[in-house]
Amino acid sequence: AQSVTQPDIHITVSEGASLELRCNYSYGATPYLFWYVQSPGQGLQLLLKYFSGDTLVQGIKGFEAEFKRSQSSFNLRKPSVHWSDAAEYFCAVGPKTSYDKVIFGPGTSLSVIP
Amino acid sequence: DVKVTQSSRYLVKRTGEKVFLECVQDMDHENMFWYRQDPGLGLRLIYFSYDVKMKEKGDIPEGYSVSREKKERFSLILESASTNQTSMYLCASGVDNTEAFFGQGTRLTVV
Image (cartoon, rainbow over all chains, first blue to last red; front, side):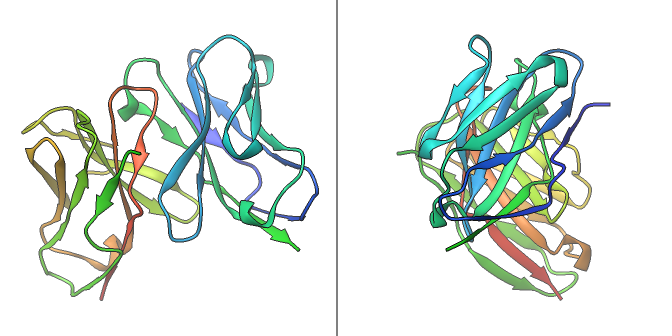
């Protein structure tokens, strides 16, 4: 069955510390991969996406993610977290054919300590 | 910037009421989606539409219907609201399968 796992329900980091949010997926073929962020009271905003090519993807707000095919993972990283990064983060995977088949993970809630 | 606007941020409705959630996008996108967001479950697709007057069921369509009479507007309808439909509802639009743009969400409480 196709699925997306985000093992960490909640993470707390200090401002200025590095961040890594984990995402693992189960999918029949190499899918499209996405990371979205949801700030409090807001909708989702796309941080970055991977379709093919270089497995290290740069996104907005200083985020990057690395696709590892052998581990079926697409972890999100940021070298130095800012207080404004406190939000809910969703990993998503989908086929190359249609967005309606995109599957979202359960989300990881990030808190940032000043 | 793409703008997807949901008509209400918060709604409180009574059990059995007919509820309309409205969504408008201003980028002439063909594709529109309605999701339900619940803690620990991520987003689940309720209905989607790839053209005017076209609609397709998503993963959890039971208890919901939709209407798309104009390209920019996609409405979600709860025919008879129930307490288990208390949730956050997110509308999204997109032009292809590479990205979706989301509205700010409507938090619906059914009492």
